[in-house]
Length: 304
Image (cartoon, rainbow, N blue to C red):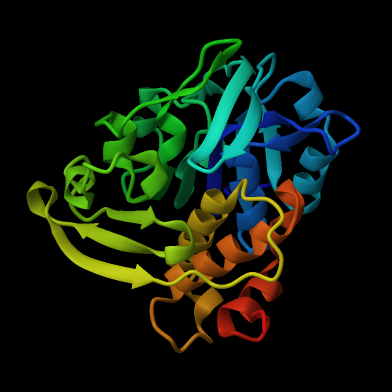
């Protein structure tokens, strides 16, 4: 890519161990899903990721590049490996390999003036220094759940409750799920950790979710609710949160994407559409193209 992308995506390309792939694994990671989703929605995307040799040479990375993403793999790095088990109470993860941190020094100079940023950790691989990298006027999105994992090689992944950090404080658009917090944590507890003017997307699966705009002292000034969009066939839940957040960010950076939507809150509706469609395909192969997302958003591709 020549010049500056519309969006810079930062994170890791992880490998999820699976039984239904001849390789025994499938590429994942918030950066992988976000980069592909944003590109397929029509934005110019640059991605700086950590990835081990197998992930870096995967067909999925080539698919992301084929979508137009300028992917820069941090030299000599490794991303995490996960073993995911879906249970009635949520996903349980183990990690045979932890992630290296993403080094801002690997970021191309021309990318530093990008107007949009997607900080998409999956294994707490984003150090605090990344809060200082985007320009002051850039629109920065953060997938919060990826900062809340504690990884030790060979052990089950442990989860932290959301906490204050420079990266969280810098983010203008923050996505987090109700399954990432305990029952006693309220939306107001979370918004107090964000800067005034930021917006938090609290997702709740089939129940949709709520978008909260933060005022002074972390108080909630406005709330927008969105409904989930029904799916045809449930295949794979991985990447749904990243795809939703990418859809919202894309519409906020380029409102023309949802100019034909007359139902209000077009950014949330595009996010819900992307989150719906990705559930119908395996891994990254479920990431939707713009025309499909618009069709489902409008109801033209909704299940009967």
